[in-house]
Length: 384
Image 1 (spheres, rainbow, N blue to C red):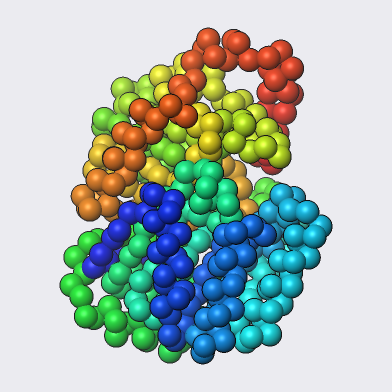
Image 2 (spheres, rainbow, N blue to C red):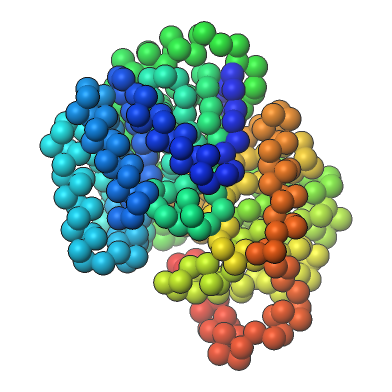
């Protein structure tokens, strides 16, 4: 879907994004929408819920969308006491009058296999949207790298309309209010919005045997095929579906400089299985000439920069779940106002000491037990 923006502010700095999110909630006077994969009971999750409760009590129509499966995963990081305290705060937000929705796909097998929504959108009546990769958790604002943008213009309505496609509800009068605000500024920054919720097009078997089209996956493959010089990528753990992986390997083999930045195995303390699923492809990538970097703190941003001329950013991780189980969205643009911040991020990542290049020697020096687990579990990467 083609759309436009009148302003785009890159939010790579963790403190800057958090303060902008809080400011939007505190300054809201009519409505506030926020979608997330999960909320953690920590200073960030609790802090945002407290601000949402305060906003609802002063008359703001608050709408919070949380993914059911994502919240269960997030619950693994919390104690029983913290999960109970979080439930109390969510109930308090509901009692204050807010719409709090937990997204669950319609079919039981989809829910059992991890189907859900992974899109992160925040919008208020002021006509600004924040769109990116961050969850409401300490990991997103004190740990991992994340990337979001603050936007104004017609794109804000586009994002809020899509809130329905990821399981939320939207008041029509709120969309009309955004139209009025958007008319006040010249919107000359062209964007394309890619959104896919595979759960809405699957049958009883859910993702099992699903052969439907995913416009985000297909769009990335098409763009990768046009690359002439360079493809730079960030993802949480790089373990894409085969057609996407093959497109990148083919690009590297035809002489395109392909660079992948994702997370080190230590970035996710709960388990190293996501890293193992990614590391299963290391030999294939390195043989093709792809440069792979691991970030010890964690790389949770989702950015694709091609030839320094086209960029995509949003929620889509390079993984099977993003293709066939989770609603995902990306904004794309060829405007320099969108590509320049991404280019600066990749330049920073390359020189950052937490970012380490993976080489054949690094793989050879892995502990024997880790090599064995990589060989054993790597074949199940679709589910890791």
